[in-house]
Length: 351
Length: 234
Image 1 (cartoon, each protein chain N blue to C red):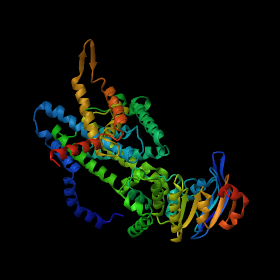
Image 2: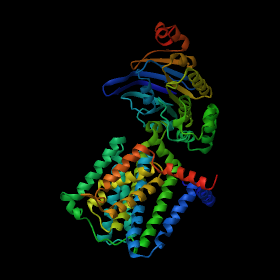
Image 3: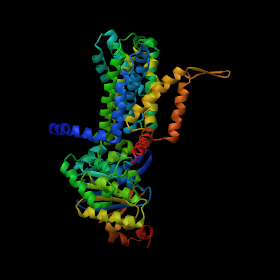
Image 4: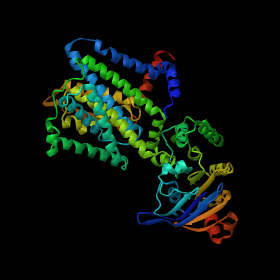
């Protein structure tokens, strides 16, 4: 199965591949963005900078991982999920429980919770895969609502920590700067892995299922098997993000970790960047986290007699943005943005 | 090679296939003709496992395949080129072919098949990197046939290859089908255009309302007054 010779060959090719990639426009732009992110924590040692502004970046990175995982399932494999918070929340809860009540080390808890999320992906993917298109979307949405209610009320909820959830968790790292770098590394890893997957033969198979399921069936592809793989892979990364999120916030509760809002966040972010681009998810995540931050910072604005609290109406604004994207940039803004930037760059260089 | 014994298939209560029996010899080119809604496509879907027959038996190379799932049947050597092409529109021509070769694990065979289909359809070679959705109708049909050929099938099922094509391009597609047959691939062709199908097929089966009404060679069928009137328009 795994041919060591091929792996070795690929490893030898890697440096030259990396070099040629950096020389391309998207490659150099990516490196440039990563460099900016890398030096960001060193810009200021100010308490308000590191503890407030820098943490927004960390949050954006968590959501970038989450949105990218959604993009793998929906953008690339065409399995529409409206309930991605399932994996995000379950992983957060497991992680919090293990740390708080079993006093597991942080990293082992994250690994276990991610694995549990994958099992959830399997368990949920299996019955839901008979559904297609909008029905699958409704099925996943219903599943996440059921889980939310299960954790929120009823006799099971007492056992599942009720609406209070679990709080007072330790942070991911001692300082926000270390936390930032941990998330930075994990975000890069996630994106490298997911982009490579989407370019590989496995990714092509997933795309063929998205484009035409009957066609791939007729080509001899076991579509059920690959759809389940897609669910498991996607829930792996969603679970990873969920574990980080629980530690980032320092607490878990049903609405905060299972809320439908989280699923829609993933959809918003990935579709802003563009479906099936993977890297678009990062763009979307940074955009929406900072938009949310800005709206809360702006807070209440008085116009005449009206006092509008922008922080309160952020979702209305997000929804408007989503509608505008769907209407005017169906395939997201990442690709057009890159093209424009390249044009500008060529213009500046006088090409 | 393929033997179908008394197949019945229903969509809910609607009967699509009724007591169909069919035998295809090795290296033959058989055609099933008939009007719209006669059950021609259903017949192919039942053979390739996209639908499970309600009753009856299908044997391929002496093995029962009627209970198998579609991807298993493809691995046994039956390749289905579905109706309305069903291409992967957002993917390149080369990627479409790569997916068609999914059951082929051997790289040498894969390369040989790729060269073979590019030779068969030079146009596809020119458009290797183009998105399948941007091809013209004729090219899309070529790609659909090429994709089905990529798995090196023993039996090729072609569903309405002439659908929505200009007469000149239809002719070109049918020339290729004849060529594929000469290369030794057994082919079962389903076609509305009876004139074209009868030109190239050895055995012709007439399917009407889910039943095989007539069968024979071109010469035999041409004598039938009903075929003349309805299908050949003479």
